[in-house]
Image 1 (cartoon, protein in one colour):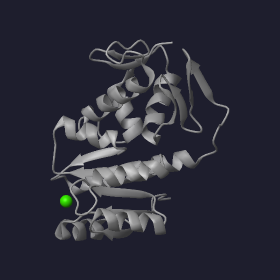
Image 2: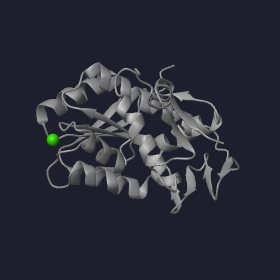
Image 3: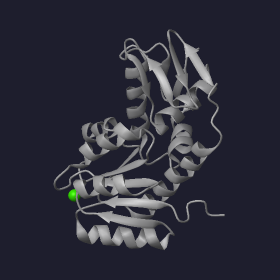
Image 4: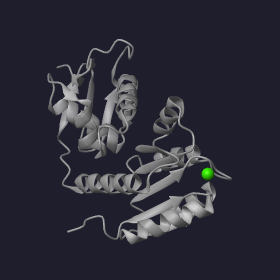
Length: 234
Ligand code: CA
C-alpha cells in the first residue's frame, strides 16, 4: 500500500514556472497540493487548512522562508519542512536547519531526488504516528530526553526537539557505546542516498551538541568517531 497517497502538501514558491511544474509532478505522485506564492499566503493557508508537509522556498516576497519556518516551529515543532534554496553555502544550510527545516535542498535540484525526499519525510511521519511511549525517558548527566513526547531537558532547560532531532538522538542513544555510521543516520533518519548530502548530518550533530554538551567544542557525550560516524558515549 502506498501510505503517502493523498497526503497534503503545501508548496510555497514564488517562481511561477517552477511552482506549476512541481505541483503537477507532486499531483502525479498522488499528493494533494496547494500552492502559495508568498510567505504571508503560506501562513494564512497553514492557519486555515491541515497539511502533512510544507515545501518552502527561502527567498519569498512579503514574509521570507526563514521567517515562515520559525513561525511554523512556534506552533508545531514536529511539522515537516523541506526547505528549497538557490543559496548553497554551509552557512545558509545551517541557518535553514536552525530555523527549523527538517531537510534542505539546493536549487537547481533533480525532480526525482525531491520526490524521493518528500516520500521519505512522509514515511517517517507515519512512524511518528505509531503509539507513543510517554514513559520512555532517557537520563544522562543532569539532562533527559523523552523520545515519545519529543521533549528534552538540555543544558539550558526544557525544550521540544524536532522530529529529525529526536530520531537522530534515538538512533545514537539506542546504540550507545557503539559507532553509528553517518551513512546509517542518513538512511534511517532522512531516507536518502548517503552519497548525497553528508553535511546535513554534521549540521544536526552540531545543533544537538549545543543542546546537550556543556562545551559543544569539546563534546563528552555526542562524539565524532573520525571516518566512521558518531557515538553516544554512555
Ligand atoms: Ca523564490
